[in-house]
Image 1 (cartoon, rainbow, N blue to C red):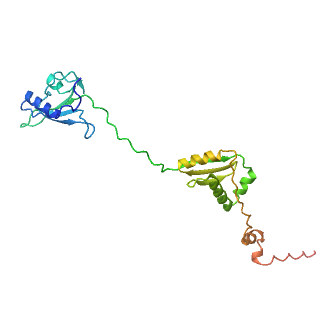
Image 2: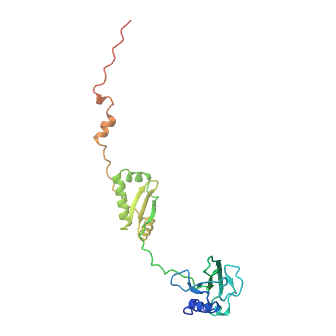
Length: 238
């Protein structure tokens, strides 16, 4: 195998000098070729006013030809050749131009630097289920907006995690959807799974409906129009 890629300083410049000596007047120039900016070159891409590349020793039939370079090229570490050529149109210009890529051994695979661990900015969700709660109690704590809010607050205090939010509560068994920082949610799940875990919800007394409810639902429809209509007169005997 040839030397490591980029081991010889200015390898493409040295290649251009060697090629120019072989093809004088061909204006043979080369530059580094790499898939990554600033990395070791994969080879040298060159152009020459000719059909044939300098130091080419075979008929190029494939996009990549091994065993097709003279010792003057392999001495720099090149191991393969790619070539395409085109005919030029113009009386004062050269008749042909060839584009030649001289390939070095493939550099070590480039890798991105390791990222710092991402902060746990996204909350984690968990559904807590309390099969010990009976349906009657569940209905009581969800019977009004006041009681729902009280049940959320009581559960949050019992879990003891300051940044955990009780998002919803629902019945079946008593279910509570919580979210918050992952470590706090995991601790809350572990605590809620303890068979001895319990919490008490202060139930607000049921509020009577407003007076407008009675006015709307208990007043007969004809009351708003005044007294009920008088009975019809008795029929006259024939």
